[in-house]
Amino acid sequence: MKRKFRALLLAGVAALPVSAAAETFNATIAAGHPPVFRWVKMLDEVFVPAVNAKLEGTEHSVNFTGQYGGAIAKVGEELEAVEAGLAELGTCQALFDPAKMAPQNVTYYTPFVSDDVGKVGELMHRLQIENETMQASYENNGVVYVGAPITIDDYLLMTNFPVASLADLEGRKIGAPGAALNWLQGTGAVGVSGNLTTYYNEIKTGVFDGVIVFASAALPGKLFEVAPYITRAGLGAQYAGSICANKDWWESLPAEVQTAMTEAASETGAWYTANLEAAVEGAFKAMGDAGATITDAPQDMREAWAAGMDNAAKEWAAGIPGGADVLSTYMEEMRAAGATPLRDWDKE
Image 1 (cartoon, rainbow, N blue to C red):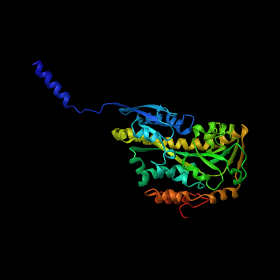
Image 2: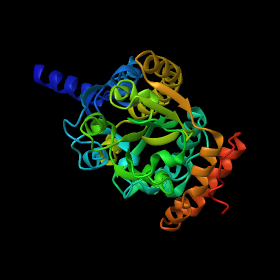
Image 3: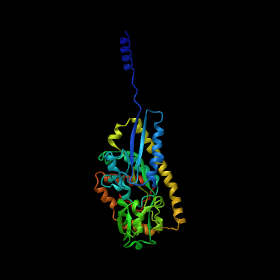
Image 4: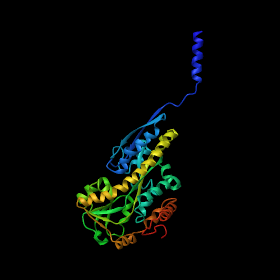
């Protein structure tokens, strides 16, 4: 009798509806740059706590581990690390992975368009979601766009010599990242590929005479110590990358975890832009107080600089399926948002 009762009891328990078991997901986040830079700092300071906060009260949680400063991926290797599953999430740096994320580099082929990081970031975020050509960059490489566009404040020149005209750049070795090397065409300068992690030593040791960089990173990188002449040339705000996720891992997550991450990325992007805009003015003041000489390039120098460049944007667009559409869409929407480009790269 007891056995019969126990069997009936177990059968009854088995028939009860079973709720989804609580689950903790592990996620390594990769970034080639160290945490001193804002696009890495935002991960632990904003993104991670925002995800955890959104998952409170659910049956899920995420255990994040940050691997930064080249621990598992150097600058430009983040996409490959995420694609291979070495990290579940990462800062996909389109600027340093131009072959695999060519469409995402549209801003770097269109300098002198706008210094408004908010407008550039908002448009580029929308294009990652809406534009099929940009979506293909993620799909073809086994990753998913999560959000939090990494926008870069207005690019400028930092040199170890004063600059009053383009003639002052003749024969000088100037470091620049990725596609920004195209910006030096027609200036007389010798463009050399580089990135923030090496600029200081390369200027200090004489490899470079200066670099194309931006104020918010120049300050923490202490570039003003070796390149005290800052020339604001209005080269423009740029889009460099975003948070991406391994596609297989992402698709294995419950919908509410995916939603928590995309919503957290949206909050992270808003924080990043506001924090960046506030930091730029402070960066100029701090570098000036430290002895840097800060000047604005004369308008005729800026116009001559823009006019002397080859239209690399047209060549770039022609070499990418759907590239012409990306170029025209970006330029048209930036003009509609109030930008006044020195050159209409899409119309020439």
